[in-house]
Length: 219
Image (cartoon, rainbow, N blue to C red; front, side, top):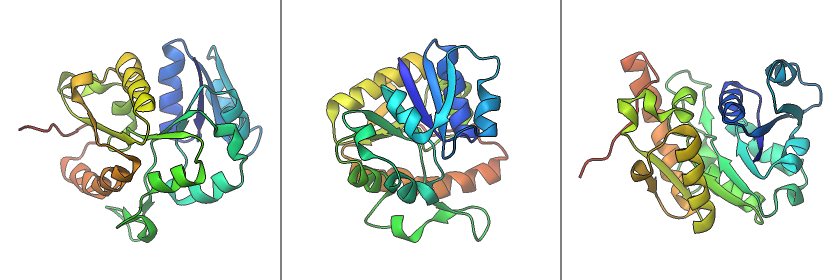
């Protein structure tokens, strides 16, 4: 599978590395060509490539969106939306405001009746946005077994059932998420709930002193 990862930070590189190790072809994308972080990432990796955001979107069968949430709206508007048409985009992002320190809060535009996931779907109406992986740390995103042998919840949401099922398979087959613990929250509007839990997660992380934890729903 050809995978595009938009974003060269720790999250993007962690996801990209895990997928390359599973045998996928991965292009990591940045705003400008010849990005130093992207070029360093592809060194000594087979089937790893670097390019612009547009290059990675064009290359990919499926796309991971790992751009800083504060800049996504402007970044997508600068791109040709046709590059995303008909493709699944896994939205890993969070609209966090760190200006007042930790724990971060949600950016005001995405803290009540609108979410970043919905914004992205609105900006890319011909793509299939699936919100996932945004509620855990990067290492846990790509290896669910790091916590409680994989017995903990991953929530996803999106408007297209087929796209969500494909994402469930990807998470299970590549990142060890157990299907019975992947919870479908419904339409993309549930991004409001999934993004809202992240400031709380950051507070718990500060108390625990580690990001390697997650939640399990018990009923």
